[in-house]
Length: 274
Image (cartoon, rainbow, N blue to C red; front, top):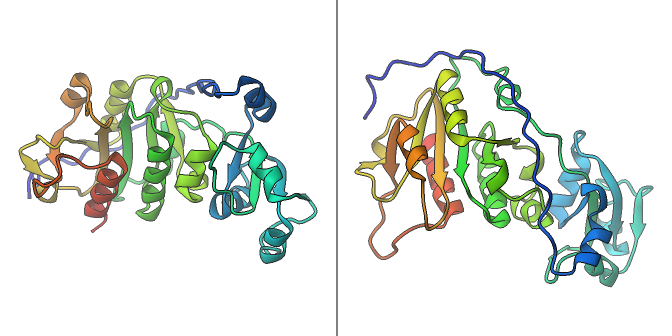
């Protein structure tokens, strides 16, 4: 295994920073967008995403709308005193075109911001832990799918750049299938600086790049690992790549040039977990 001789980094305190969220991107229908997303609220839809939001004590939900059939089928998990019974067409009016709501939508407030040191406050230097950082990933569905994988493999948090990542959206929550409520999303101003903080906390930063010479399977992933992934197409930026301790690749057969970002993250996390 590579890097076996690397000294274990010790956990040490890191400075606090509380990044602000960018405002949500405008809708194709500005008037409808302002009506539905006033005050930063947005609609979470789909069975798993909506019920997970309602079960999360840290999630503030303003309104629940559901069909009579959904309420009857999920009476044990749904607070019927708060749910408004509506027709499917009324739910569809509240959501983007083509949204698969499965009979329920929850108008929710974005989750509170968390800092890196808040998320890692109770991590022991002896634990084997992992975080994922994204270098300017912008697709909310991809991020949602990554959160789903992160929840499946027990990842501590997902780190994204505040100015180059989408805010919480219904499509992100739907793709996450409930994982948005379980995996903290840490928004940072400067990813390279955050990688430095992770190193101070004992993490080895492993960048993924299909052109790397080292296979991920031959990389030592013991201790504290921070995977760093670039955006689809452009990959890791120069300074981000330079700041990584290791650059590794997922070997491909040659029949495909690259992997979807969410797929690459899922494979990497499986490799770490095994």
